[in-house]
Amino acid sequence: MSTAVRLGYRTDNPCVGVQLPKSQLTQDEMTVLTRGEFALLLSHVQPHYQPLVLLLVATGLRWGEATALTPGDLDLFASPPTLRVTKAWKRDGDRHWYVGPPKTKRARRTVSLPDELVDVLMPLAAGKTADGLLFTNTVGQQISSSRFWTTTWTPALDAATQPLRDDGTPDLDAPRLTRRPRVHDLRHTHASWMIAAGTDLFVLQRRLGHESITTTTETYAHLLPDQQAAAAAAAGRALGGLSLPSDSRSIRA
Image (cartoon, rainbow, N blue to C red; front, side, top):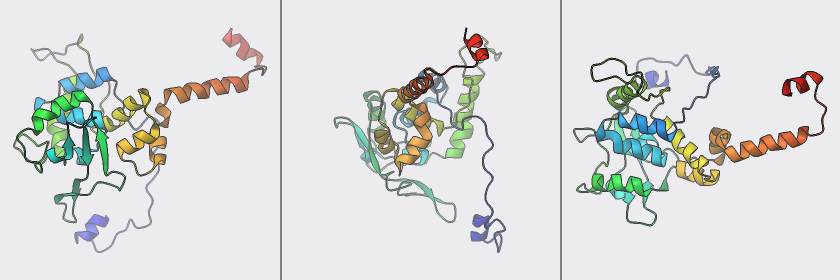
Protein backbone atom coordinates (compact mmCIF):
# COMPACT_ATOMS: atom_id res chain seq x y z
CA MET A 1 0.00 0.00 0.00
CA SER A 2 2.93 2.32 0.65
CA THR A 3 4.09 1.63 -2.89
CA ALA A 4 0.61 2.44 -4.22
CA VAL A 5 0.72 5.80 -2.46
CA ARG A 6 4.24 6.51 -3.74
CA LEU A 7 3.21 5.70 -7.32
CA GLY A 8 0.09 7.82 -7.07
CA TYR A 9 -2.46 5.02 -7.20
CA ARG A 10 -3.86 6.08 -3.82
CA THR A 11 -3.79 9.27 -1.77
CA ASP A 12 -3.63 7.47 1.57
CA ASN A 13 -2.47 4.20 3.11
CA PRO A 14 -5.27 2.48 5.05
CA CYS A 15 -2.79 -0.06 6.38
CA VAL A 16 -0.80 2.43 8.46
CA GLY A 17 -0.54 1.11 12.03
CA VAL A 18 -1.91 -2.32 11.14
CA GLN A 19 0.38 -5.17 12.18
CA LEU A 20 0.64 -8.33 10.14
CA PRO A 21 -0.55 -11.49 11.91
CA LYS A 22 2.05 -13.84 13.29
CA SER A 23 2.76 -16.97 11.33
CA GLN A 24 0.65 -19.98 12.28
CA LEU A 25 2.89 -22.44 10.43
CA THR A 26 3.75 -25.56 12.40
CA GLN A 27 6.47 -26.78 10.04
CA ASP A 28 9.95 -25.36 9.50
CA GLU A 29 9.99 -22.38 7.14
CA MET A 30 13.35 -23.42 5.69
CA THR A 31 14.17 -26.48 3.63
CA VAL A 32 17.68 -27.90 4.05
CA LEU A 33 18.85 -30.31 1.39
CA THR A 34 21.22 -33.21 1.88
CA ARG A 35 24.14 -33.47 -0.51
CA GLY A 36 22.37 -36.26 -2.35
CA GLU A 37 19.17 -34.24 -2.68
CA PHE A 38 21.07 -31.23 -3.96
CA ALA A 39 22.99 -33.33 -6.49
CA LEU A 40 19.70 -34.76 -7.78
CA LEU A 41 18.17 -31.30 -8.11
CA LEU A 42 21.30 -29.89 -9.78
CA SER A 43 21.24 -32.65 -12.39
CA HIS A 44 17.89 -31.31 -13.60
CA VAL A 45 18.96 -27.64 -13.73
CA GLN A 46 19.76 -26.30 -17.20
CA PRO A 47 23.55 -26.56 -17.73
CA HIS A 48 23.81 -22.81 -18.39
CA TYR A 49 22.63 -22.06 -14.83
CA GLN A 50 24.36 -24.89 -12.97
CA PRO A 51 27.44 -22.75 -12.07
CA LEU A 52 25.17 -20.15 -10.43
CA VAL A 53 23.29 -22.80 -8.44
CA LEU A 54 26.60 -24.33 -7.35
CA LEU A 55 27.89 -20.95 -6.19
CA LEU A 56 24.72 -20.30 -4.19
CA VAL A 57 25.02 -23.55 -2.25
CA ALA A 58 28.81 -23.33 -1.87
CA THR A 59 28.91 -19.75 -0.55
CA GLY A 60 25.50 -18.95 0.93
CA LEU A 61 25.31 -15.70 -1.06
CA ARG A 62 21.93 -14.04 -1.46
CA TRP A 63 20.41 -14.10 -4.94
CA GLY A 64 20.91 -10.37 -5.50
CA GLU A 65 24.55 -10.62 -4.40
CA ALA A 66 25.40 -13.64 -6.54
CA THR A 67 23.79 -12.33 -9.73
CA ALA A 68 25.59 -8.97 -9.34
CA LEU A 69 29.05 -10.56 -9.17
CA THR A 70 31.66 -9.61 -11.74
CA PRO A 71 34.99 -11.29 -12.62
CA GLY A 72 36.68 -8.39 -10.82
CA ASP A 73 35.12 -9.59 -7.57
CA LEU A 74 36.98 -12.90 -7.81
CA ASP A 75 40.48 -13.70 -6.61
CA LEU A 76 40.76 -17.29 -7.77
CA PHE A 77 44.54 -17.47 -7.40
CA ALA A 78 44.62 -16.41 -3.74
CA SER A 79 45.19 -18.94 -0.97
CA PRO A 80 42.42 -19.67 -0.28
CA PRO A 81 40.55 -18.43 -3.35
CA THR A 82 37.97 -15.77 -2.49
CA LEU A 83 35.23 -13.56 -3.81
CA ARG A 84 34.36 -10.11 -2.53
CA VAL A 85 30.72 -9.10 -2.00
CA THR A 86 30.45 -5.33 -2.49
CA LYS A 87 27.16 -4.90 -4.34
CA ALA A 88 23.75 -6.38 -5.06
CA TRP A 89 20.79 -5.82 -7.36
CA LYS A 90 18.27 -3.25 -6.05
CA ARG A 91 15.04 -1.65 -7.26
CA ASP A 92 14.53 2.09 -7.32
CA GLY A 93 11.29 3.95 -6.63
CA ASP A 94 10.06 3.18 -10.14
CA ARG A 95 10.81 -0.53 -9.73
CA HIS A 96 13.77 -0.35 -12.11
CA TRP A 97 16.79 -2.55 -11.39
CA TYR A 98 20.19 -1.09 -10.55
CA VAL A 99 23.37 -2.32 -8.85
CA GLY A 100 23.83 -0.77 -5.41
CA PRO A 101 25.42 -1.59 -2.06
CA PRO A 102 24.62 -4.93 -0.39
CA LYS A 103 21.86 -5.34 2.19
CA THR A 104 23.80 -4.18 5.25
CA LYS A 105 27.28 -3.08 6.28
CA ARG A 106 28.14 -6.63 7.35
CA ALA A 107 26.95 -7.91 3.97
CA ARG A 108 30.06 -6.32 2.46
CA ARG A 109 32.41 -9.24 2.98
CA THR A 110 35.02 -11.64 1.63
CA VAL A 111 33.98 -15.28 1.17
CA SER A 112 36.46 -18.13 0.72
CA LEU A 113 35.80 -20.60 -2.07
CA PRO A 114 36.31 -24.36 -2.32
CA ASP A 115 38.60 -25.60 -5.05
CA GLU A 116 35.72 -27.44 -6.73
CA LEU A 117 33.89 -24.14 -7.24
CA VAL A 118 37.06 -22.43 -8.50
CA ASP A 119 37.27 -25.05 -11.27
CA VAL A 120 33.73 -24.09 -12.32
CA LEU A 121 34.23 -20.31 -12.09
CA MET A 122 37.60 -20.14 -13.84
CA PRO A 123 36.35 -20.81 -17.39
CA LEU A 124 33.21 -18.77 -16.71
CA ALA A 125 35.24 -15.64 -15.89
CA ALA A 126 37.75 -16.15 -18.71
CA GLY A 127 37.31 -13.69 -21.55
CA LYS A 128 34.93 -11.40 -19.64
CA THR A 129 35.77 -7.86 -18.62
CA ALA A 130 36.42 -7.21 -14.93
CA ASP A 131 33.18 -5.26 -14.57
CA GLY A 132 30.95 -7.49 -16.70
CA LEU A 133 28.35 -9.74 -15.09
CA LEU A 134 29.74 -13.12 -14.12
CA PHE A 135 26.33 -14.80 -14.37
CA THR A 136 23.91 -13.85 -17.14
CA ASN A 137 20.84 -15.30 -18.78
CA THR A 138 21.15 -17.12 -22.09
CA VAL A 139 21.26 -13.84 -24.03
CA GLY A 140 23.93 -12.23 -21.84
CA GLN A 141 21.67 -10.01 -19.71
CA GLN A 142 20.82 -9.76 -16.00
CA ILE A 143 19.16 -12.92 -14.66
CA SER A 144 15.61 -12.15 -13.57
CA SER A 145 14.72 -13.95 -10.34
CA SER A 146 11.08 -14.41 -11.39
CA ARG A 147 11.98 -15.71 -14.83
CA PHE A 148 14.64 -18.01 -13.37
CA TRP A 149 11.98 -19.39 -11.00
CA THR A 150 9.45 -20.10 -13.74
CA THR A 151 11.71 -21.29 -16.57
CA THR A 152 14.56 -23.00 -14.71
CA TRP A 153 13.96 -23.68 -11.02
CA THR A 154 10.36 -24.92 -11.18
CA PRO A 155 10.99 -27.28 -14.14
CA ALA A 156 14.02 -28.69 -12.29
CA LEU A 157 11.90 -29.28 -9.19
CA ASP A 158 9.19 -30.91 -11.26
CA ALA A 159 11.70 -33.23 -12.91
CA ALA A 160 13.36 -34.09 -9.59
CA THR A 161 10.10 -34.74 -7.70
CA GLN A 162 8.31 -36.53 -10.55
CA PRO A 163 10.95 -38.31 -12.68
CA LEU A 164 9.71 -39.57 -16.03
CA ARG A 165 10.86 -42.23 -18.44
CA ASP A 166 11.79 -41.36 -22.01
CA ASP A 167 8.23 -42.22 -23.08
CA GLY A 168 6.79 -39.67 -20.63
CA THR A 169 5.45 -42.17 -18.10
CA PRO A 170 6.36 -41.92 -14.38
CA ASP A 171 9.60 -43.66 -13.47
CA LEU A 172 8.76 -45.18 -10.09
CA ASP A 173 12.25 -46.67 -9.66
CA ALA A 174 14.20 -43.44 -10.18
CA PRO A 175 15.47 -41.43 -7.18
CA ARG A 176 13.21 -38.49 -6.44
CA LEU A 177 13.13 -35.33 -4.40
CA THR A 178 10.36 -35.34 -1.79
CA ARG A 179 10.49 -31.59 -1.05
CA ARG A 180 10.32 -28.41 -3.09
CA PRO A 181 12.93 -25.94 -1.79
CA ARG A 182 13.03 -22.28 -2.72
CA VAL A 183 16.13 -20.80 -4.34
CA HIS A 184 16.80 -19.03 -1.01
CA ASP A 185 16.90 -22.44 0.68
CA LEU A 186 20.29 -22.98 -0.97
CA ARG A 187 21.56 -20.34 1.50
CA HIS A 188 20.06 -22.30 4.38
CA THR A 189 21.49 -25.51 2.97
CA HIS A 190 24.95 -23.94 2.84
CA ALA A 191 24.65 -22.87 6.47
CA SER A 192 23.53 -26.36 7.47
CA TRP A 193 26.48 -27.98 5.70
CA MET A 194 28.91 -25.55 7.33
CA ILE A 195 27.49 -26.24 10.80
CA ALA A 196 27.61 -30.00 10.23
CA ALA A 197 31.29 -29.60 9.31
CA GLY A 198 31.97 -27.85 12.62
CA THR A 199 32.05 -24.22 11.44
CA ASP A 200 31.80 -21.75 14.33
CA LEU A 201 28.65 -19.60 14.33
CA PHE A 202 30.71 -16.40 14.45
CA VAL A 203 32.56 -17.50 11.31
CA LEU A 204 29.23 -18.42 9.71
CA GLN A 205 27.83 -14.99 10.60
CA ARG A 206 30.62 -13.27 8.68
CA ARG A 207 30.35 -15.70 5.78
CA LEU A 208 26.61 -15.13 5.41
CA GLY A 209 26.85 -11.39 5.95
CA HIS A 210 24.45 -11.25 8.90
CA GLU A 211 24.46 -7.87 10.64
CA SER A 212 24.20 -9.54 14.06
CA ILE A 213 25.24 -12.88 15.50
CA THR A 214 21.72 -13.00 16.96
CA THR A 215 20.32 -13.50 13.46
CA THR A 216 22.68 -16.42 12.89
CA THR A 217 21.97 -18.12 16.21
CA GLU A 218 18.20 -17.65 16.00
CA THR A 219 18.13 -19.02 12.47
CA TYR A 220 20.57 -21.92 12.71
CA ALA A 221 21.24 -22.83 16.35
CA HIS A 222 18.79 -25.73 16.13
CA LEU A 223 21.06 -27.33 13.52
CA LEU A 224 24.04 -27.65 15.88
CA PRO A 225 24.37 -31.43 16.44
CA ASP A 226 27.02 -31.31 19.17
CA GLN A 227 25.15 -28.72 21.19
CA GLN A 228 21.90 -30.66 20.82
CA ALA A 229 23.61 -33.83 22.06
CA ALA A 230 25.21 -31.94 24.93
CA ALA A 231 21.85 -30.45 25.89
CA ALA A 232 20.22 -33.89 25.88
CA ALA A 233 23.05 -35.26 28.04
CA ALA A 234 22.68 -32.34 30.46
CA ALA A 235 18.94 -32.99 30.70
CA GLY A 236 19.68 -36.65 31.38
CA ARG A 237 22.06 -35.73 34.20
CA ALA A 238 19.42 -33.44 35.67
CA LEU A 239 16.91 -36.28 35.64
CA GLY A 240 19.37 -38.75 37.15
CA GLY A 241 18.23 -40.15 40.48
CA LEU A 242 14.64 -38.99 40.10
CA SER A 243 11.98 -41.62 40.64
CA LEU A 244 9.87 -41.93 37.51
CA PRO A 245 6.13 -42.66 37.68
CA SER A 246 5.44 -46.36 37.69
CA ASP A 247 3.71 -46.29 34.30
CA SER A 248 6.76 -44.56 32.81
CA ARG A 249 9.05 -47.27 34.15
CA SER A 250 6.82 -49.97 32.69
CA ILE A 251 6.82 -48.24 29.31
CA ARG A 252 10.62 -48.01 29.33
CA ALA A 253 10.81 -51.68 30.30
